[in-house]
Length: 68
Image 1: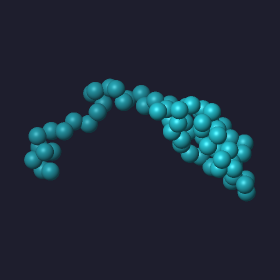
Image 2: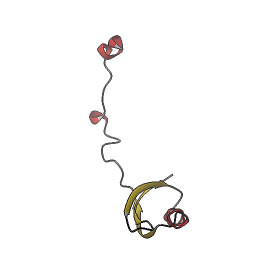
Image 3: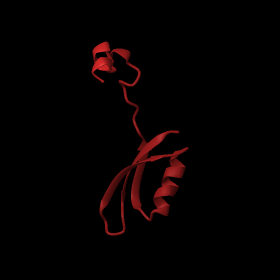
Image 4: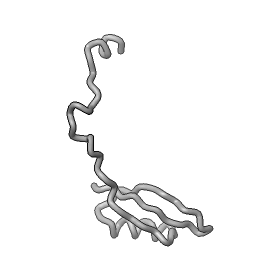
């Protein structure tokens, strides 16, 4: 499921930031309305650019396994 980030205001005017996992932006907006949040912006959470880069991932060595 896609993840969305949002910024909204609560009843006393304090800004709230958070994340929501849902099927589409409309469900995220409905979630915020149910929580009585106003003046909100919702956008899709950006993908991690290093998620699929193999050489950037940590490697488990034999030494790590032995120490564990």
